[in-house]
Amino acid sequence: MTVTPNVENLLHGGRCLVGYTDKGEYVAGWPEVARESIRAINHLTHHGPIPAPTLYRVLGELKGVGHLLPQALSQLTRGLQKSLELYQVYDARDPVDSVLEATLLLNQATRKAAELGELLEAAQAAISEQGYHDEDDEDPTLFDDQVDS
Image 1 (tube, helix red, strand yellow):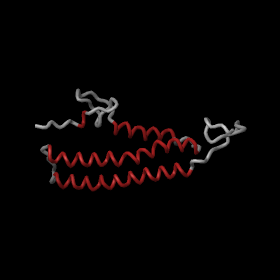
Image 2 (cartoon, helix red, strand yellow):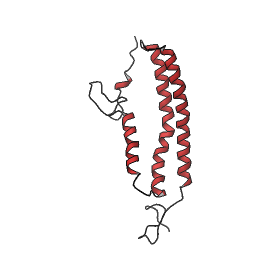
Image 3 (cartoon, rainbow, N blue to C red):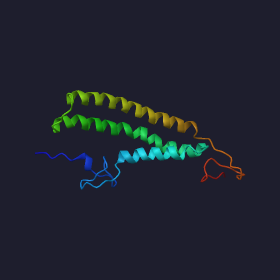
Image 4 (tube, rainbow, N blue to C red):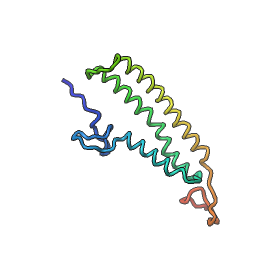
């Protein structure tokens, strides 16, 4: 008999998928951390101007969401489909129909996520050479760590 690991309790970097360890201890799961990260960005970015070099760095990280999310969604979709074979699934309607509907929607989300990554990367490229003059800076450079020779 093949033992299927309980994906809910697998740990990566000290966190699991749904927020509880195999001992029943609550730890914020990775999807919750991702949501809270976006929430923090929302709080931090509503205060005023954001210079292009700052946004460039932020977009450099956020575009990864669009590039990595399709893989995660595809794996979640395959896992859901496989669950029909391994578990005694019940649903108010036919479980195969509900998984098919979820699969179609997740496939659509996968395509949208990939497009998100492409758009964020394009936005980053659009501002890649922009800098700004600080009031006190007599010889500004695009990034603080670059010096003109």
